[in-house]
Length: 96
Image 1 (cartoon, one colour):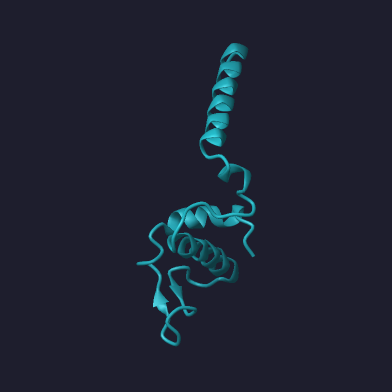
Image 2: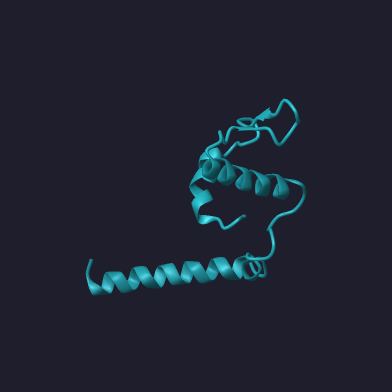
């Protein structure tokens, strides 16, 4: 890749990045303190992200939890519809 091509690629990335921030304002300014979206789904997904990370770190099965429907627990494959996404995001998230 030559210098002109690198500059063009950088310019495109910057323009798209700025467009994404502008189109999602003010959410983009509050990502560290707020959850975008509405309704109960936001909290379900937030819990699922936490559970997948917690289960991987502690060596549990991320597709089963004893924390819901005690004492039987629940198979999470129905609720963890995007488990692969969450597994990829778990190391990057700082949810404790």
